[in-house]
Image (cartoon, rainbow, N blue to C red; front, side, top):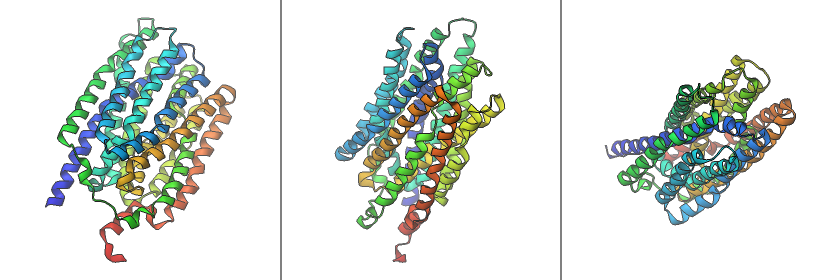
Length: 414
């Protein structure tokens, strides 16, 4: 009875943190849906957009190695989360104050927003991972991602309605500034529910029982192999601002509908994350192999075929890849890394992911300006290259969460 009660309380914590994620994603994914068009309107090239977005991801991910280690050292997961969210949510509405010729300041704020995420993400993921031991890592992070993407769907949709309302203004730059300004509303609710969660659940680490030392030592080689595989996936995964810029240049979808296109991608992301997360607790890494194989060809449909139908197909595949990326990837880290160094593990994983995301975004942005076909080939090949490594990982008995859980539940198998 007590175990059932603990599981229920852990689930309520996961849901409350999901609400935080919902409003957070509504803010920064809403902004992300117009970054490409906004910067392009300010006269920024595809290579520069790729560099800025990639640099933002590099900072947003690479610093997690430091912030994750610091959080584990001090055990101040709540404080790191609150400071990070405050910076993360504060930077976006400030873009509304940037003048038409001040695109460099806008880029700086975009990077600052990623810096805030670097501070809070390892700690926030660690807090959720504690509760995932009761709920199930796949289910916990899938639920987080589902609520994330509900926000990521609502954010672009909200901005689409603003753009639609102002379609006759003739001043798209001012419209974009209004869009950034209105995102202060979900930013406020993000911080409100975060503080409420801290007040209600001050010690979520109590959800998880320590894992024995013998099991800690067996996780290292699998974790490293996993990080290498996912870094290859990150290298080839094209950021959405490049997609929106490409679609805007084709002029086959009105600019006012670009946030709606991103909202659709986020909706697919939410549904696929929920499905893959549930499957992960049952089948382990094999689910990630399937999702990678399914989403690897999104660039082929978006950038080779100049039709609305194929672009939509590509965006659906992109959304599936994002859904797996944001749910299964975190679930695997929570399963492979022990509680005592979980935040450091998230930091190492996300640092490598971010470095390869940055290099990939920059190179793919340059290739877009020179040869779109080459960009597509590099994107697809890099993502497919991660699959053989993941297959090697599944051959290990301890790489599957299913087997990992069974060993914990049935110690009599010695």
